[in-house]
Image (cartoon, rainbow, N blue to C red; front, side):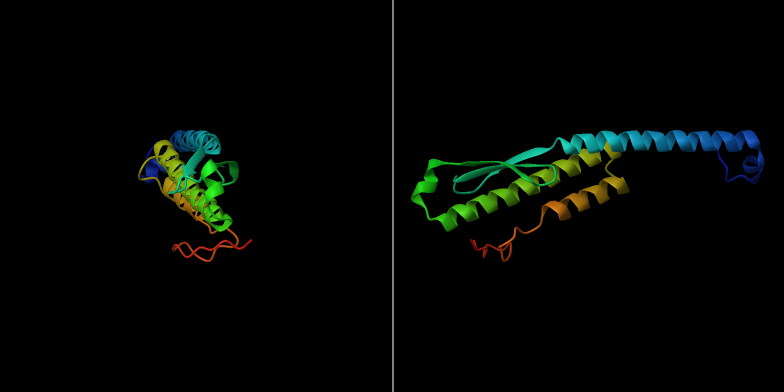
Length: 145
């Protein structure tokens, strides 16, 4: 990029054009990287199981449940326990999706990138939300059906 902090360079039309071209090229490269990152994040799918091996869930990049597999063990426990297992697996899967999105952002934009940090923070905020009907994340979650 041309140095326009030098008043002489700034007033030179060719130097100004070079600076604007390099600024535009840099902005285009950043936009291309951001689009590639968004496409990769969109493809994120994360699965997780609960600790008692009752349920396995898969979520997409937005934390939306796209698959649920219940094991035969669910027939030996009460419905509230199954519900807690599903919600626990869902929280794990969402946390995993946020971690994957963060890794993609860092890989694409760089570890010291403010953009990568903001994207990671937003994904964690979006995906680390309580489910309706849960009181907290402290293990006191209760199924309200």
